[in-house]
Image 1 (cartoon, rainbow, N blue to C red):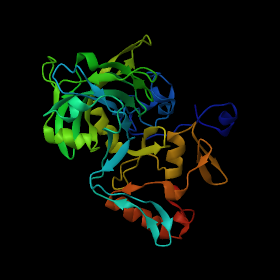
Image 2: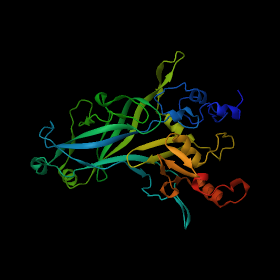
Image 3: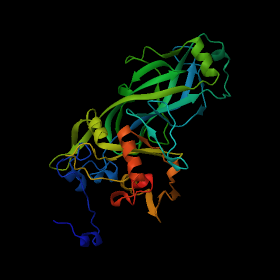
Image 4: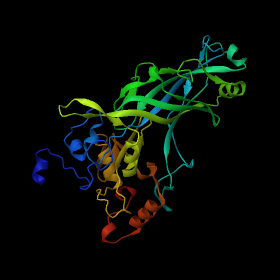
Length: 360
């Protein structure tokens, strides 16, 4: 059916995609399946648009550390101070974006990556800590929660995490059978909020090696050097519908996620309470055969957050709060950075409407 403006008045949505690629954003669902909503309905609803990827993004939240001076973890004392999500990039740079007196400001990197790191510091405890303070070593019991801040549901979720203290890795642990989440829908957590976190206290599959701190590490932690938890990788699979409409295992997310990253731009919003990550189609302008539709940053934000981001008088609002350009952290590769500067400085017909980062 050829699209006409009359269809809009009837409540239909117009979708565009790469006509030469069945999976415009590289996720497991074809553009037709997405537009027809013939996919796992526990994916975020914005993924019904062929330009928004179904993409799981799992972060392991460290909620509490319990210390014990003996291997059986009896006579334990718990920490009670934690910090929030912290996003870092490969160069450790802090990036301020926007257009100020010195022109456009953004970070440039050939290998930008972001990772979620959370930490717990000892803080103050009202419990008796005498046996901990005098111990030659200690063992830790970490209470954690898995958060899917992305748009794609993931099944049989097995994160691999590293505990880090003062830039030294204490231990790297892969989720075992009793810490595997059967399913984490987009935007949800395991265990669900309101329930206590799950316990990670051993380094092997046989629960025979508690996670140790030596005397030096114990002293650092008791003096409020935080123990950080880094999410290294996550195993899990996605579901697809069969001809009868039933969900069946579709395959591993491993490998698919890399394809998505190659074809999309990452948009992360941290509103102070929650973090979410969306992956929106990004055209490769160096590839003359890439027919992915071009999107401005403003259009990508509205596609990725259809319920949360609205436009009023040219300004975007996230849940009724304005998103000023200066609050957007933009990180670009070198070629894209040059293109941004070119578009903003170019007053010709092609770019006469490009006045802000949102218009690029």
